[in-house]
Length: 233
Image (cartoon, rainbow, N blue to C red):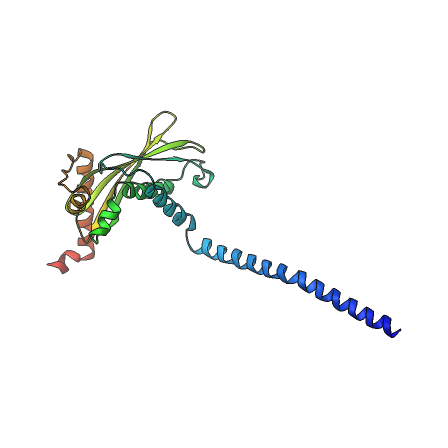
C-alpha cells in the first residue's frame, strides 16, 4: 500500500507539472495578445491611425520613385473609391476629397523636392486655405486620377490646383485650390534653392485672382471683427 501511494503521488505531481509546463506558454501568448488588442483599441480610438499610416506610406513610396525635375509639372496619383470612403448616399463623402488631396500633396512635394528644399532653408509649409468645387460624385469602385500642380506663388505662399479626374470618361469630378503658406521663408527662395536658378511665376488665372482677393477680404474682415487691426496700429 505504501508503494502504491508513493507512485500515485509521483504520478500526480508529474501530471500537475506537465499541465503547468504546457499552460504557461499559452498564458503568456494570451497575455501578449490581450495587450496588443488593448493597445490597438486605444490607438485607433484616440488617433486617426490610418491617416498617419497612409501619409507615411505616400512619402516613403514617393521617395523611391523617380524624381520630378520640373517643379511646375503636373503629378498624378491614382485612387479608387472604397467602402470606407462612402457617405449615406453611397458616394465618396466630401471629407475624403480633402483627405486624398493631403496625400497627393505629400507625394507631390516629395517627388519634386520642395519638402527637402524648405527643410534645408529651415522653412515650413502649412495649408492656409482651401476651396473645393464638387462637379460630379464618385461612386463605389470608381477609379480616378488626382492631378496636382503648382499654378502660382507670391511672397508668402504657393498656390496649388488639384483635380479629381474620373478614369471612365475623363470628367473632372472635383477641383480644389490650395494655398500653402511658407513659414520662416518665401516660395521664391525655396524654388531658387531647389532649381539653382530664378524661376518665373506663371501668369495668375482670373479665377485664382478672384480667390486670392476673397482670402484677403475674409482675413481683413475677421481681423476687424476680433479687433486685431486696432491692436496693430
